[in-house]
Image (cartoon, rainbow, N blue to C red; front, side, top):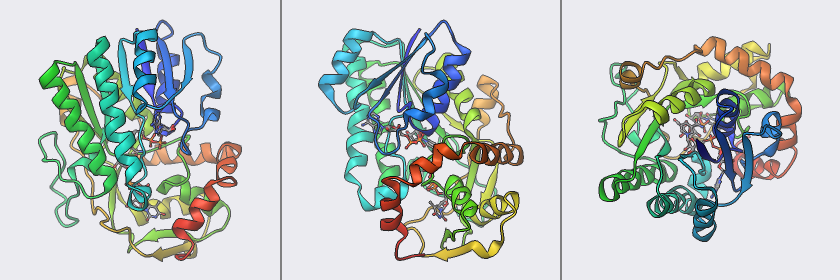
Length: 340
Ligand code: NAD
Ligand code: DAU
């Protein structure tokens, strides 16, 4: 099989490329990535010389380029990770989220319609369901939960999901969608909660916790997400949505304290800052469909996953220090300058 992985120089796409190149030496994995601020070819070093791997630089919203790529490569499968993925950036600059997440996805779907495809898989998010109240721990997101978005980011992802389903119903494109909870693990860009807190704690810098730190996220190790997508692409039913999550709910404060304890740093580093506008309160995934229909089970629990992840950031300082010393430092100043 020839598989185009879009956004394969980012966090989850990069981990997925590693996983697929190792697991399926007989398949060809093409990594298509525009190399935005979030794309990093350093992440692909372990696979760059493998015979079943190829990198192509390009933009999923560039119609001419995408159509030519499909004509040349004739892919069997597309797994679409490429996206603007950070909620805070979507609040300061929503437009690029519409271009990449919505128009990029429809451009890929149009190419699938024109050239044919065995499966188009859309990597979506639990954020399309909105949030749950903090005082109802009995509630979970299922595949039937209505879409009800909060941020420009989640609205762009929900729009993309609707287009994917519309292309399935109207044009008969074979599709699947996965909606996963918060990921953590190696190669995550240090603008996201866990790597941000690890990198700042190591430098004895203040840790910005939004609001009172009581918001809840449902954490899943990135490798478990990759395994689930692989399973859905190969065995999932056509036209179906699958939720992915491992029942690892934690408040943000619990996560930050876990990082501090693991690094032997004091809780006095925590600084409560102005809340994120429209901040979703709680995410919690019910993964029953994926478990019962496809037999998926996560390998990591939060404790073992966090230990492995923190160890990875300790052993791969060069990877993230390179990022935080570059253009990212301007972003940090813009977003947090008046908060810290
Ligand atoms: P990321 O920001 O780390 O990586 C995104 C990648 O997409 C980057 O390599 C970037 O260069 C590339 N990209 C951006 N615009 C592009 C374009 N126009 N054309 C081609 N490439 C482009 O993101 P991530 O955290 O790895 O998330 C990957 C996907 O998974 C996203 O679709 C996101 O919505 C979804 N998701 C993320 C999480 C999470 O916790 N991070 C959870 C569930 C779902
Ligand atoms: O749920 C899946 C989603 O998870 C993905 O679709 C998104 O792409 C991904 O970015 C993530 O979104 P979140 O907004 O949940 O992740 P983030 O790491 O930005 O924030 C996690 C929580 O931590 C959230 O409640 C906000 C809080 N936070 C975040 C940052 C960056 C802080 O308190 N301080 C911070 O500095």
